[in-house]
Length: 455
Image 1 (cartoon, rainbow, N blue to C red):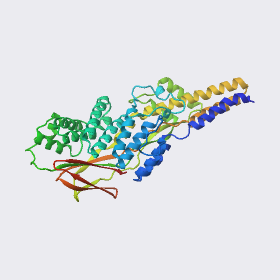
Image 2: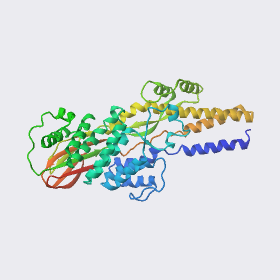
Image 3: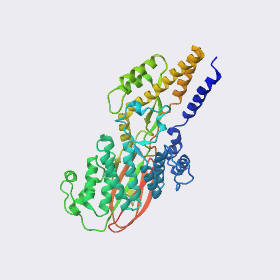
């Protein structure tokens, strides 16, 4: 018999592990993610407020935890879908102040997976694309409110982040195209054509945006502002456009839902191969591979839990934009889903390697418990049962880090046209759903209309 006093610490450990294994961000975010997918941002706001521990969108949490910055990003996106742009900006800025950036390229797999229970026990760190999209979405908030000063501040933040991420892969840099275009629009509407043209050049470097070349051509012909990158794309801008009092109307349509993480089980053999193959980021060391194969041969390790990225929907229907009943040019400005999936494929091996190192920690804990129990009780069978119980409970408690900004759109479309001064009706169609807004443009003025509840 194992002495009762020696079973108490083990029982306490198993109870603690059982509690640690509950939940995960996939469970926390499921309700507001599904509400957004159904095109219901108001119920989504209620659910995210519950997760933040507040009653109203006007409230910030009095106490913060490891997920607070991420939940503020979620609420900021939901508030934007509801047209509550000022509160959305506040949440984005509050999150930005406490948001660290994830770097899976320099850490070892062991340091990434060092936490006994789960990677999601740590403060949330945003991947590069989320940090860059934060600036872009917040610029939309300011432009939709007609606040050029706020939009210029956000564009400068984008430049800072661009320099920070200049050595990242092309997938991350491609996230800059729309933000740079919006920054160019901001400075053009501010009457500062030189900086506007430089931002338009940055947008071209990042892959371009529909309507960009035509806008740059008009700006070049009207003001003479130049940028070598833009000049190559525009060619001869032609004569200056006629001097009229028309204004600029920019329409942004955010559709669908970005991919999100779910916990996935992978056979240990396939996991070791994926975590050892060459590629960017950390991989298993030879010693870790040997240890994993040893535990697999003993039958202790059979599966690995890791975060898998999944799409909400396949396919992307076209968006239709009409102004005063007339169809206007529109196009895909940012393919969020494909960029997120591309980045995930680069770090997938590192995530699996981190999951294996966590399991190795659990397996070692199980063997240690077995040895201690066998020595203290003189009962080899009891030691084996305790060891398997501890290792099994710890494995069951392994909730891989499924945190990501799930309320991001799948894609963002842009349309831009010149209109005479006065009131105009903008209509957008997507998946059989219609949205409309009325906007009043002053002579030589501008307006930005955003639709982001078409998910």
